[in-house]
Image 1 (cartoon, rainbow, N blue to C red):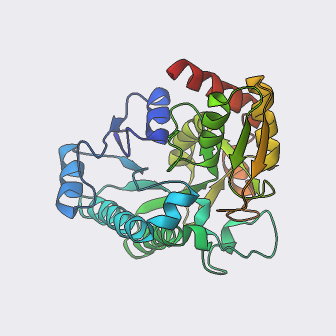
Image 2 (image 1 turned 30 degrees about the vertical axis):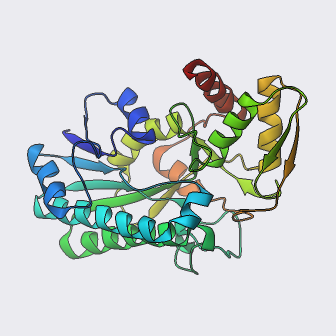
Length: 299
């Protein structure tokens, strides 16, 4: 297959390239996908495509989402609309797009949530614009699939972490920020974290997602936003304790109660495993150890 990957220099795209170096990878350095003209050019420049794996988008942690709601919805809506529509216009038969668990409602009756829960309420206020932009990508994908008969589908990964992540304290996700704070600490320090430490999170090791994307490209042929998440669901506090054990440092930590985010956002991987068969996800401790060692080596 001739496959084009958007967001090719990003966190997931870089990990995927190690798994499938034969695919074609583009980034914002190559094309501005907020422009329909450049999105069309990206597809035309890679002639006779069998598929597009769409990973590109404006992403960030809880704080950056809260402070840049307009930019998150505007840029992501443009990128997603251009890729789906121009792929259809250029007769690309297959598009597989990445969503986010932020598409699911803030208030869910039962956990873990399932694919059918997506429209049961608005996305969480902390990721409101980003959540709606990604939800619109799912709606658009389903609409093109239904009306035009194209094999376009989506998947919904849980929180991602791993080597190559963004470790900037202002814009990173929790695990990367935690690693940086603990790595830079000295014995006897007291580290401050956002929130209360109580929220639960499924953390998906980026190398697992990179392994799963080619399977989804081959097997996920429906309109469902299939959830990609491990079973393991840990509190923020439990993750900090694991990271401290890995680091070997003797420090104290506290929580400031700000930017708490959702208390829970864990999704069911039942449909994923029914589709691809049994898959052994990397445990958080093992994945975190690999990520911490990578970060140390990159300093």
